[in-house]
Length: 145
Image (cartoon, rainbow, N blue to C red; front, side, top):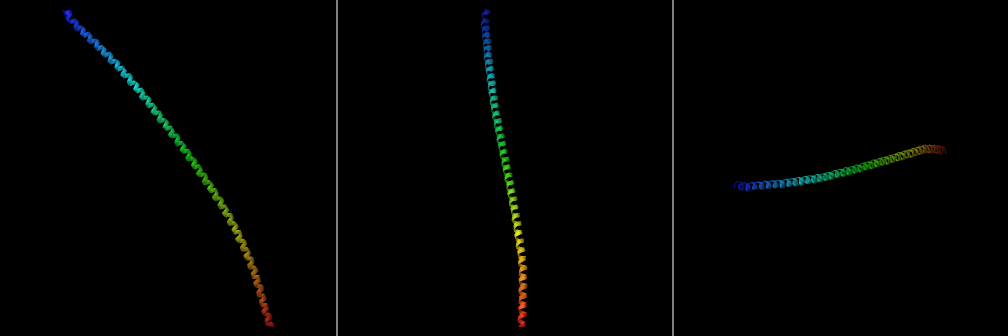
């Protein structure tokens, strides 16, 4: 009698224990699958982050190169402007020296003309003296006769 009563209970308990073990196995299996999924997603996230970091670094390098190119262009422009300024300065200096040469030529011409005028004045005074003398002599001869 006793064996008959306990036996089904033992069987049920053993069955429940088996079921629990089965459930625990399933839960462990699902947990390990979840852990693997999470790890895979973390790795994918890490890879994606690395790609983003690489893209950002690439863009930063390109920006830096663009800046350097711009700086090079600016320095070329500065050099061109300086060269033009130097050429302008040289042209101004050449113009000034030409103006000085022209002025000195004008001064020489003016001095020549002044010298010619002095000579003419002397000649005129001689002519006036001669004419005056002739006039006086003529008057004297007219009075005598």
